[in-house]
Image 1 (spheres, rainbow, N blue to C red):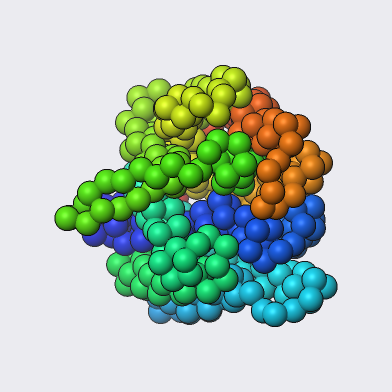
Image 2 (tube, rainbow, N blue to C red):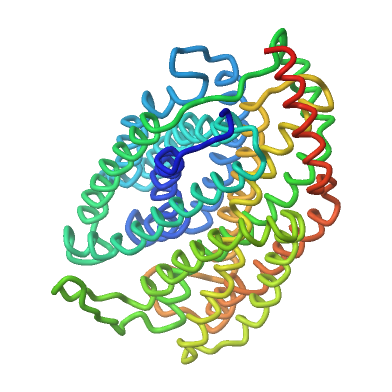
Length: 463
């Protein structure tokens, strides 16, 4: 009974990442552009800000996990944070996209403060949300299914955000450089994310409890994490995966604005209304739709050949396709879109796997050391994910500066080539690093079955 999860609860769990992913995708795809082309900051300044604020935020994640592990309420350890933090999450997100009438120094300070607060509140709600996977069920296959639901909703939320962001900004402000357009658009998304987080809170239930008699001890929890070899391997693989995605995401808007012509509009009819999409929007929406295909495919493939083999194959293919992507010219729009779909399917396969594998590493730690610290394991995992995003985000700003990028002017051939590299060769290198790490991952399906049976036996004896 502990492992039986209804469709309604799986959908409820997915709503949480739909909310997080809306802001996450807006940050990864558009925040650099917002800071350079709307807010008026230099790309190198933004890259350095991303590095500093995200390093702090990455270190903040384990603190949130430690506190969440020790939270005791009638709703459980992790669910209450979805209820408490949903509104602050929306408000600080709105402030991040507000443009005050300050001088350059004032704008830099404002950007540092609001972005730092945004990343902290993101941790406060997202670390407990991620940890929730480890206590909804103890069944490894059910976790993979839950993780797939989570990722489908995550990419669905991202798809919704990327589909609406440019039309909403243009509707409220007239063009993509409008300060008012950005502010009102983020207000709309803030309302949606609040409702989704609350839906996740009300529709889920924490089931998996620590073995009776187990005492919490931070020093011992940290020692257990240090000895957790599978977690360390996932750390390296996760960082490589996030660098792969964040560089591609961060450079995409620049790729179409300054390399491929973004003036063409693709129109389509839906429910009697005509919608127009730029090549940028089409590229991003296709990527998110393809991510969902990858997420859906991940569970049956992993059930057949194992999580490790699925991860290895998906990232290897993503690296090969990314190298080929470099050779497309600005006129090869169809090939660019096709390869965006193929690469995104590969990337989509990985995300539900890695979070399910983190839950497995928490089981491994409990099995090996006799102690469970789900919040710490997932917060440290979230830290690694954000660290990869930090490297990729900072590198995007620095690389744009290195290649001579200047906002809102025609770019030189060197700059255009640099932007091409950021969509192809550089992400491919990060994918190769991820593949090399996952080769050494030791938790085979047979090993996980043994761990699951042993832990269930211990819980039945002690609870």
